Amino acid sequence: MSEKPTNTNSLSRRSFLKIGGAAAAAASLGSIAAVSYVAGADYDSYTGWEDVFEGGAQFFDRTPFEVAKPTYEVVGETRRISIVDQSFGRHGLLRPVRTAWVEETGWKEADGLEAAVEGIRERLPEVSPDLAEFYSQEENAKKLELDLLRQLIYEPQQRRDSAAYDQRFELAMAWGSAWGAVRPASPDTPPEEWDFRGMRAEPLVPKSEEKASQLIKKAAHTFGATLCNIGPLNPDWVYANNVRGGEPGPFDIPEWWQTAIVVTTPHEWDQMYANPTYGTSSDAYARSSIAGARLAAFIRSLGYAARLHSPNNGYDVVVPPICIDSGMAQQGRFVYSIAPELGANHRPAVVTTNMPLKHDKPIDFGVHEFCKACKICAEQCPSGAISFSDEPDTVVRGYKRWALDLEACYNFWGQVLGNGGCRVCLAVCPYSRKDNWLHSLSRTVSTSDPTDLADKGLIWMQENFFEFPDVKDYYPPTYGGTNASYRNGPEWMRVEEYFDVDVTW
Amino acid sequence: MFDSGLIWFILGILFVLIAASAKVWAEDLKLNMNWWKWILVALWYGLLNFTIAVPFTFWGENENKGALSLLLFLGIITIILGIGLFSFLWSKRAVESNKQVTS
Image 1 (cartoon, rainbow over the protein chains, first blue to last red):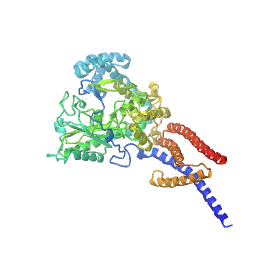
Image 2: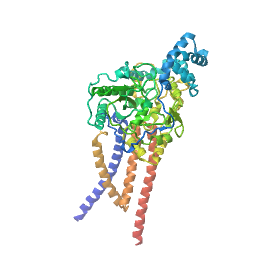
Image 3: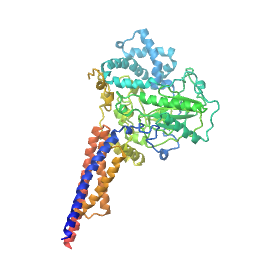
Image 4: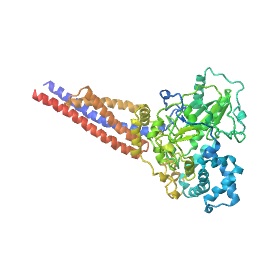
């Protein structure tokens, strides 16, 4: 008689445990779903925007990936880059020549681009010998036509398209231009003056180069840099002519440009993901430029020469290869640099100095192998500027790399609407992902798998499970597109939600 | 709440309850569990959580198509493996029962 109630209680406890366990399983799965959703949406998952102000929230240990030499290949005679080699500089020189020629001749679109190409080609030797020589080289034969196609055909059409369609992006454009309101001064005196402004008369002598590097990195983070790396300055990365603040023409590299400190910051996440229209370059440009300007001033106050090269005050150096030399990043298929923490979503600035600093080693965390298998940026590039080749397929000034059709890239900027520029390659790059458990896991697996099977699996999933706009949709309707962005703009950038603006498309 | 440490404390309690409950379920179903069978069950439960966590993280990132695709992809794999695992455990139970009947 006395055992029966005991058995009943025992059975009851088992049933309770079974039912409770089943309920707990359901509750835990629900909680995992909620935790995961928050991990994906949380502002702290925006790379570089975590709750630690001074950088370092998304720490990546570079030590296992350090290599003795930078990961690019030298295959021929190298040389410094000329202003006319890159589109910005060349267009800057061409623009006044073109404007004067058009005013003088009264050229109209109906006269045809060919007439303008011939007329301006004849004019160039007397007004811009550098440009004339550049365009006369066999490999650059088509570039005058492409450059004038942008200036004479695309840009006027872009202004017409902007009047018709840019209402949707008014808020994004206002936000983008606001970032440029505060910017460091550009050099207006030669480097032998500019780089020494406000410098302490007697330099403070560091206890060691290593200690000095630690200090500089610490200071850079307090000034707003998300990442800071230090490397040597390869003379090939210094422009060959037109040093800022100096006389036009060739210049010798100042002897105090010995070390290059790179600081970088990412773009605001949602806008970066909504390239090319809602996104902008201005936010990260401004943050990196200002962090770099503060760092340069700090170094001069310690008694060493320092010069900022930044998006907002101009460059005398080419920055992406310095990111590679300093171990901050590796070069990707789209030629720009990919950092382990930020992927392609970052905009660097450089401070050149003679302060004795320990240099970081270059890194190889598998970008080259990954990019060989991944062609998403090339597939999504609106202008088709990015190479589809399995292996690096061109040599530029002696360095082998994947080809980038700069004219096609830059000409698309002259067509697309919104905030200016494109940056779709930054957004679609699989390395440009948020800082949460899922992408941290992917990064860890990708960088530690020697078989590349993980890379291939991740790329397969990216290509097959995720949404990509049709490439032509990135263009305005004039060119058959829909003004698409890679992802929708964030709610707070949709002008129609906040202002009485007639968005008709 | 779901981005705080408290949720992991609560989840820890739930996981302990689930583990204790699983032992009772296995006994009542006479699954004849041993250490490596428990490891298989734990791995499958980990996969189940992963299958939930991955798509919901992508939903949080506003990657709706990717989230749904991965829920289907991982969900099908998890269900197939779950059915396979349970069938295996059940078949072992049957073998053990038959042995007992035979003896």
